[in-house]
Image (cartoon, rainbow over all chains, first blue to last red; front, side, top):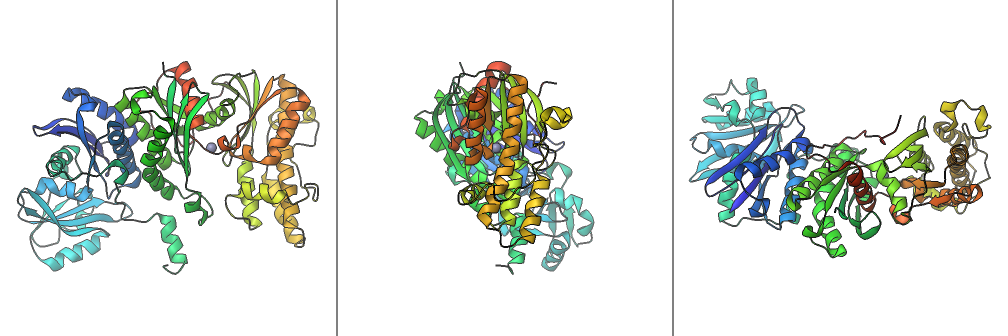
Length: 233
Length: 343
Ligand SMILES: [Zn+2]
């Protein structure tokens, strides 16, 4: 089955197409945050490079977040419209799981930290299992200080991965047995999305376009202010 | 070619999809409003709007295709509003439209939301009489435009401060009538006396020829809003219905008086009312009077087509496709997009 993967949760945007032969073509823009301008031409490019017609796509995989809200919505709106228009199901993949996937050979505790801006991180913990990684703590929003304190308490060798980890590297380098993943793995990647999604497609872990749920983790500011004013109601 | 256009509108707090043939036959027009989600905050919250658009997109799209009785393969072009509006909301519709255009292998067309409001008036009366004086009034815009042809607009004047719809919202909030303010004031004014209080009408009572050219077709509503607030403070016994009706009358007076001046000065053959405030009953009534008295044809959108919808987007898209061809796939959203004006 051919899968189209769309990734726009971080500061970069990309897409890829692939299947049991692996990734056939991919595109990626790392500069700026103009996700909406870049994504549709990327899909058109990837389709041509792979030498396929879009009607051959059997499922659309998408990074459902957490991530930067506006970019995330560009990818999700594009992906659900593609899937609905093609009449195919979707494979939702959380951004942090996607970022941990390329570290699946590491025996260390994998700490994923995606830059959430405002001095915060979207973060989750993973360990390797046969064929991939398994989340051992759910995604949450943390300050670098909070995350550092949590990891210190666990006291075991760790691998930090993500643009948030690199941005706040000073908060983590003092930890014992810490290693930083390279820049090339710092952002969620559409290529890995297609690989990860292919395995899930084999297990038929599909959702329909109208069932897809973005993962925001943060409430809109207005609702935060509102509940504060209402005494946390 | 390109006769059946699917339109998508997500510029503010309405998720809408429509299927329209040749800019005149509305096969379906589905609108999902988020008004209740924003009402508690007294205005549209951009992040809440963006999330709701993502959630509503596929259900509204599915309804629009089902009601039109067509499938994706029947669609000849996909149009979406690219601005003006809330950027995080616009991007949902633009992204979805480009994706559908790719999947169905048909042109994508970028549509200006202001231009779309104009085309709401022509959905039912497609034979234009040009030139046309256009009064465009919404929560974000108040302008008088001379339309010389499809896509050919000359700005006559616009508001110097608040938009008319914004003035309605602010006064309604002050009077405790809730959000959105326009329909609330319209309804309450029915029980009030429009001549009860003589609120100021800026640049309206003069002879138009004595006004400097840049003021002749200009509007200003902030002084009116302040006058209403000061009046209610000094006269707390004033009946709210009378205040609402008198305020509404002052706004409508300014709008229709300048429309009349523009018709007379330009020799226009028709006049068109567009935008959310075009749903106001008093404005519709007096706009029609002006057209009758000046002997020009009136183009008014039906009430359902005054508020944001995608039929008007599909209609404007059909005309844009004919005049300019498809829009590029790297088109983004422009929150501050203006009406494309001739200079
Ligand atoms: Zn509008």
